[in-house]
Amino acid sequence: MGLERLTMVLQNVDSPFETDLFKGFMEILRNSEKETPHKAALDLSALTVSRRIIADHVRAVVFMMGDGIPPGNEGRGYVLRRIFRRALRFSRLLGVDEPLTRNLVPELIRTMKGPYPELAEREPYILRLVDHEEKTFQRTLQEGEGHLARLFERLAESGKGTLSGDDAFKLYDTFGFPLELTREMALERGFDVDLPGFEEAMAFQRNRARQALAEKLSASADISLMEHLKETSSSFVGYETLRCQARVLLILCGADTRSELREGEEGQVVL
Image (cartoon, rainbow, N blue to C red; front, side, top):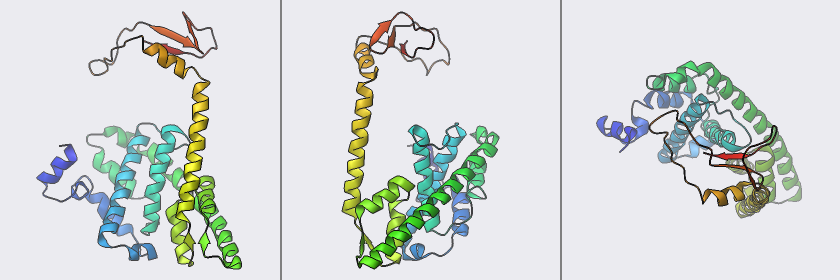
């Protein structure tokens, strides 16, 4: 059933977010909120979902940073950045303008440090990363808002009432400006956003990225490695031990198998 669902049943509440795992965090979050047009437009259900997204995402970010993953533009660092920025976006929409490092992150670490003492040990490092990422996202928002304001001026001058999907996607792709914020700001000024056009631009970009990745993979040894792996077998013993003696089954350099790698060469080793 999982620890959090079990806790929910034992504490007789309707959601894991109402258990003592999240209770202090959610209280601080509610007390940090200020009235905004977006918050005023939410019903109780949407408001609850928004708070839970913030709580869930901040916790994920804290644990990822605690494991040594910094925000970045690729790989797992990019996943972390996207999760964190989604939490920041919902915080902004609910009027939480205090830095997360001031209350929310320390409260989460305080709650979790019993079973996860490494979070308390790494708290200064986590807070530095969170603070830096918040400030970076704030600059991103300021740049995006400035560009968006100029687009609105052009729309008003041309008499058009809809921001094009291409323009909305450029804001997202170039500035990292969330589509939801673009829509919110457009509605405040009486404009619509071409959502199908945005999705079309997004799909085009994804296909282009997939093609680029396929070309990169076909030029690497990965495909050759997969062919060789079909002919080998390997046992995973990580559940029983942290160390073991292993035998080298295969060394692959480019598309060629080797008995060894020369100094400075890169290759793949199968154990």
